[in-house]
Length: 262
Image 1: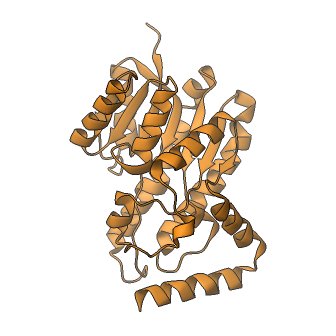
Image 2: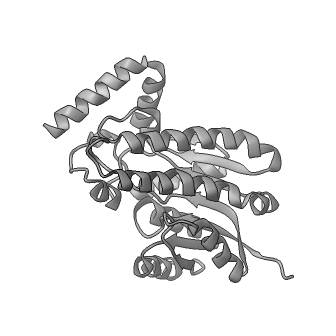
Image 3: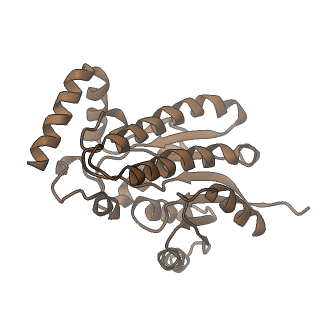
């Protein structure tokens, strides 16, 4: 059987941070696979990367939140003679609103994509990651450090991604597999529109561009850092969240949510 070609798999690559990460990995010589639902957007990104001098990425148009999607994605790679050396789990979405008021099925779908699919893809390719001395870059959020009234399920999911990735970093280190978790603050992308987050909801000093977040994420991953928080104000916020009593953090977050929705 011919050997499989190592690639960097980027999920949620059709826009925002995922697209920016695909560009940065390609700029640094990685052969990239773009996976997301919208094929036209993936094709446009692949064309842009090729036009910039990179190897034209492979495209897999797939709904990663659908049952069995990780297996179908793995089959699609195998059919093309590819195997992941690096997995970038960026696919996900959020919803703004009280958990009891939001659609329950949609919130469960959020868990399936943000948590279940990410976990599946983080573990599915460990053998090939070890073979190529690669790794996993999971995209969480500074939301993972904070309870989130107004986005309770989203914050809880990102807390899972943060904890899971930190533990996996230690577990897979003996295999030569690096695992990093990227925790950006607010980034003005389609994510915020999809979540129903109005402009100005987040303090401007916490915001960074998708391109800057991607570059910080790539650099931290290649350095083998466990947790990557782009931007000094965001790093201070995560430190304060861990040092401040939980009831105070929860009270502040709840007060901010109530003020924003008033």
